Length: 425
Image (cartoon, rainbow, N blue to C red; front, side, top):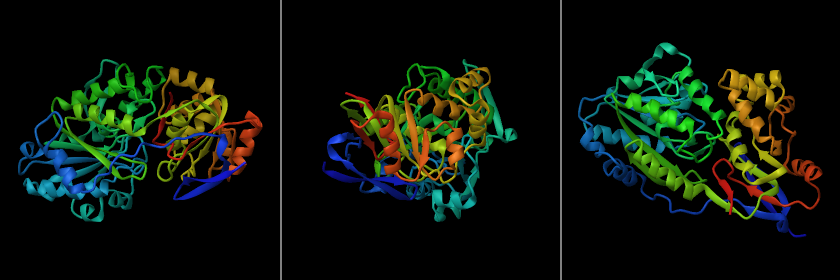
């Protein structure tokens, strides 16, 4: 049988394997869309011909205070490329450096170092604009804006409350339980307090919560309601990019944080949704390298995408370095304490905890298929987390997978599994 070598991104490098071509049902890849050639022109066009609101230059006045919300390192948005353009536009509109602040939307993620902040927004911007982490655990840094109809207390970072205008930057991809990233997520969960995030994320246990779903999705609807409570008193302006798998800009959506995001989500479906003829016995999926495979916490999103391509009782081989381990002590402890998916779900239904929710997200996928890791993750930790195995090479993982599914297997390959969303035709 003729073989072809396939490369999968792994951390900052690659893992390769030679596979028999006739076994491959499909290589799941995105449709090619034209990339933006002149970023400055595209950025300025987006903000001054926005969707659903007045142009930025008609809203921002000299002397006002501006807060930019920016992504943390777990979200690729190419922030360092567009921030200098946005800051220059602020200067043109009469905004001084000292009247601008960058808030990093961490949600419940770890704090960023100063070096990471500089890298995120570019040294030129970091040298002149004040930068802060939104630390969800520091309750005193948050202001209360009421409670949603689903009971989520809305606590938003005070840095945002002091601004005349809040510019919500970031990128948009599918999200495994809140439908899509971007949009309202810059504020909730991005710049919300721990209890706000915990209560909102508890709705992920609802079967209506899921990837690519907004209408009827309780997580998404609760986030939208929470941000609307905040938006009654504050000016929000969305600036979201959609990137391709090479992290190149495809399109920028700016303007009203609801309407512009809705338009962006339609485009995301076109870019990342991929038809497959059938589910496979074995799926080999890469998260897309660093930072999408920085830890298990981030890797899990690719697990969700891969699950859509594998048959019941099949095997998913995850190519994910996980250089920072699990990414969550709570995630680890939940697995070690509760041992199985059923116990994890029961515990979360009784009291929902951030970190433990990832244990649920991971273990629920294992009902359909085994997951084998090609990873640097500690082997005992992988076992504790109920992964079928953790090995050093895709070859070794494939041999284990064949033992499970038999010799007459068919494959689907997902080299950009962190982004692509397969669905059976």
